[in-house]
Image (cartoon, rainbow, N blue to C red):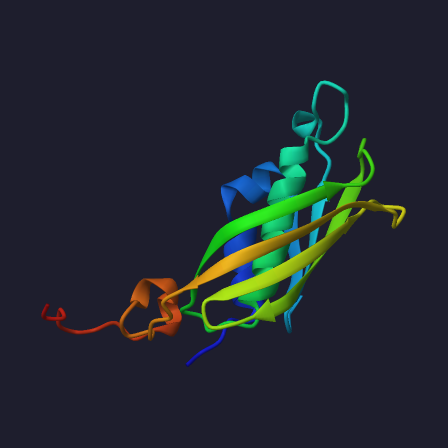
Length: 159
C-alpha cells in the first residue's frame, strides 16, 4: 500500500484556505516529524494585541496531524479526538514555528506533541493531540483520496 510522501502532504495542506488565511505553511513532514510556520498577522490578534489562542490551537492540530500523516498509508483517514494547548508566553508578532512529533501510533489511535517557538527560539506554547485512525482502505476502494496516483475503476462496483 502506498504511503504518504512529503510532497503530497505539503501540497494538500498548504492549499487549504484556513491555513492560507492564518498565515500557516507546512515546510516539512517525514518520519513522524513536521515543521510548520505561522506568520502573526494583524487580523489574527486579539484586542490585547497578541496572537489569538485559537490560532495556536489550529497550529497544534496542523503540526501534529501532519507529523502523523507522514507515517501512515496514503489512504488512512484521520480524525482529531482532542488537543490541548499550554500557553507559555504571549506572541506579539513575527513568525512562530511548530515542530510536531508522533509519540505513539497504534492501529486505531495515535498521540502526538508539538512545541511552538517564536523567532528568537523561545518556547511560547506546547501542545498535544490524540487522533483516531479511521478505516484504512485500499486505493481501489477509495480512489478520490489519491487522485492521479490511483487507477479508476472502469465499471461501477455492485453493492
